[in-house]
Length: 158
Image (cartoon, rainbow, N blue to C red; front, side, top):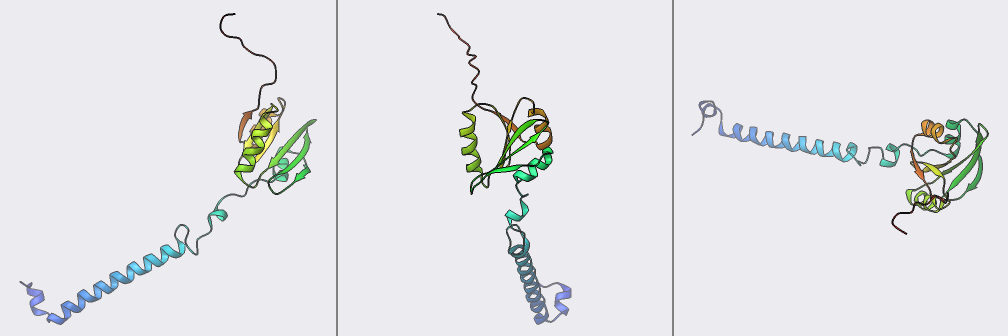
């Protein structure tokens, strides 16, 4: 049964109203979908994920933060390395374009012992004198290499 207001309205106008509402809803969905396609995450007009990531530090940037000027000693596709001096200490800095190159370098370097300050795309070789200072300046995490001190503990009888 039709409502009293609907009884007064012509049957065609109710159908026109429903059709208009359907088209309006469809238009809203189309506009929202277009906005998501253009400006949503990974959208056509949105900044790329590479542009949203902070740029990796260069050897020169890290040296500047330490307070020295780096002399570049290696410049290859998978490694850029430099040496600088701060407070009488030599500081080796290496940067990498990708994680696998950094992981491979660090795995090899750890076999020689020592300590390494590791950040996103970079490694700094630490000495006991520079460890705390550089960790405070650059952040990252300290990773230890193999122990070559000859101090072994013996457990068990014998």
